[in-house]
Length: 397
Image (tube, rainbow, N blue to C red; front, side, top):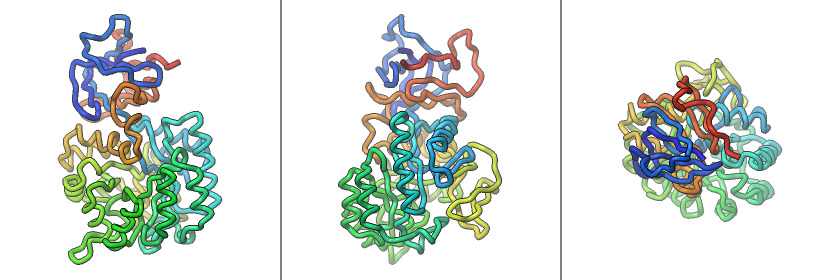
């Protein structure tokens, strides 16, 4: 057991000073006033840093030079996780974009096996496609965009929400029974890469769709005579929406307006690709060469191909360019995605018994370290003589 002290604690509900976060093994034991902390409890002084529940990314194609579609393997997931930690993301959904049934089954098997040992880093699989509208496929490989196959839908449902956490599809291209089968298996169904009308999107919401994928992008827009998927999503108060706050996918003013309308149903995703967390000029996605230039990932035709965004950068953009208060921007990266997946009892907020995933940063939103399932990792220099933010922190048994 150890306690993080001398820090501002963003619990996901409130902001606390002069409190300590007590961690025992893999879980949060308590949030207690410093004065009530037992004398025998080891203390780690964070020198005025801030802590918040570990970030959760529900849409992560790749990072650290790897792409899940390219190498569907445990080694890829490990690279992604270790890269994520340096930007504060402690849990994520590896995202497999439109591909073959064989690759989808391989991804299901890989994630299922990986989660046996790492259930708190990879929370499950996000299947983005292949049941999309070809008119809104974006960078996805059109050769694989197709209508649902009954056997594959059954296989996804049978894998269950412990393995397949999220499926993105175009509701106008999928039968209501298929949506219902996925939702009844506990899988979150999200509308994305869709050209649905307002009526079609609304029908999807009534059939079991509870989310939209990267709001504004690859979906029918909100127009004066046709609200489209964007208008429907903004109109339904209970529908969650992920949004990419890199300044390229969505204008910052649009993010501000969406936040006013959606409130705690709007959460941050990175939609990151291999350049995130590393340095590289190009990569392949959806069978196309994508170039990383001036902060954007674009194909030769100018189509956006994911992002190079990290979650701490998305938060900083929300604070500095959108005007969202820091505490709320942090919730958009932790509590709200956890609520969207119905797992907020374990993730996204500090409460006794929740998983000990913690992001540590300074007042300029520079990353200092994380607690990854109870284990403290530090990224900056520290004075080990006063038990400041050090790398020799306790390891959970």
